[in-house]
Image (tube, rainbow, N blue to C red; front, side, top):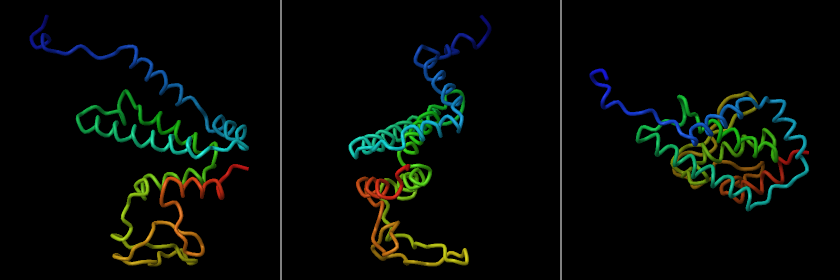
Length: 174
C-alpha cells in the first residue's frame, strides 16, 4: 500500500447507482421522433387533475431534494450521475404527451418564472412584447397583479388548478 492510500475511500458503486446510470442511458437513447410517436399515440387521453397535481408536486419535491443534496456536495445535475436530466425528460415528456409543446412552455413558466404560483408579482414590473417587437410596460411595481393573463386581462395559470384548467381548455393535443 502506498502512502496516502490508507485513507482513500472506496468508490461508491452499488446496484442502485448502476440502475440510475442505466436509466439515464436509456433516456438519452429516446429520439425526438420516438417522443413525438408517444405524443401522437396519446392525443385523446385526458390527464385528470389529481394526476396532474401529483406529477407537478412530485417534480417539485424531487427537484428540491436534489437541490438540497447539491448544497451538501452531491451533484446530480452534472457529472457521472445526471439524475436530474432523466427526471426532467420524463416530466417534460409526460406534460408534452397531454398538452404539446405550448402546454409544456406554460408549465415551465409556472414552475420557473411563477415559482409554482408563489411569486409575488407586485414586486416586479411586468412587460409585454408589442406588435413592433418592443417591450412595453404593462404594470409597474407595487400593483397587485398576476404574472399571466388572457386577452381580457383575466389572470391565468396562477395556481396548480388554474394552470391545469388553462392547459385543458387551450393546449390539448388534438
